[in-house]
Length: 387
Ligand SMILES: *Cc1c(COP(=O)(O)O)cnc(C)c1O
Image 1 (cartoon, rainbow, N blue to C red):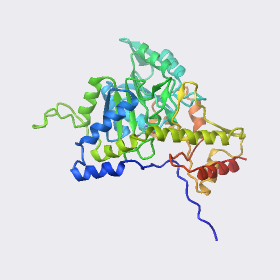
Image 2 (cartoon, rainbow, N blue to C red; image 1 turned 30 degrees about the vertical axis):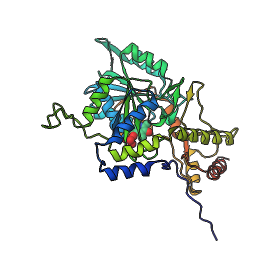
Image 3 (spheres, rainbow, N blue to C red; image 1 turned 90 degrees about the vertical axis):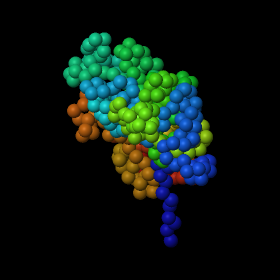
Image 4 (tube, helix red, strand yellow; image 1 turned 180 degrees about the vertical axis):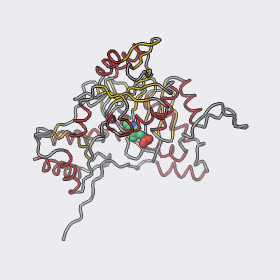
């Protein structure tokens, strides 16, 4: 008789706090939609967790990015620097504004946006027009840089901030995977002008679906909030002087988010413990490169991702298939964005590492409640697949 083995998912939410109690409160009081006390509480507590004074909750991380770009002044004819290796939502938000991404390569060891290449792009590929960097080929003005803390490891932000100051670029962090991470002791999401988060089902904390902008600029926060509620100027007459969006989070979602947020530190600690356990078990394993954490970084290890190097057996896709056959969900990193059909006409600058990472990377199960037995199964299956 065969024993059915439990499937081990990549990353699933863990809802073991006050979610149910807060949801009951929503239903009992009738506050289920966009008004209600949990939205403000969630905004306040999340901003506090990141050390920023203002939080604006949104219906998704993508909506947060879109609004952040708009309030940063990104519009038609502009360009925004984006890493080539990230989830497509980052670039899509740029396109929603009528702007175009410029894809810059990631560094080979941190896998994060390469600040030296950003500097080289601005120096060699742009001319200054009215003091603003303008791409020589496309004629687009570079308005902002959008670093993404991929997999929860912070981007090296100090050099990037210096470049941004020199070229008057707004810095918008996509800190979705790095909620609870820090850079030189400072929280991810609070390292730029605006920080964006997603609370989709597989993120560090979830609201089912949702997002947040954090900032220390009151004007930007107010404008983002205004645009998220259909830019309604008059609550009685419903006067609208510009086009807004229906991008608000609901009270029900915020209730879940608040309960989740109360366990943020624990979620990050668990992810880091899972990563440490993988790292110890895979030490010295031939053909497997483990992720690094820079001396100045505290990563969330949102997903523990290894590289399967060419010398080792049959490549990452075979490893993923082998894990799948053992009931284990693993996944490659994203296709480099400049290769995605909607972005083939966008600028890509010196992209060398993103493709290799896409070919070699395998993300392993990293749910907060991953049991030690299950993790051992993943490790054994991975070792067998590579040897
Ligand atoms: C999940 C994710 C997003 C999108 O967030 P949604 O809430 O799904 O819209 C954006 N950027 C990164 C890096 C993400 O991981």
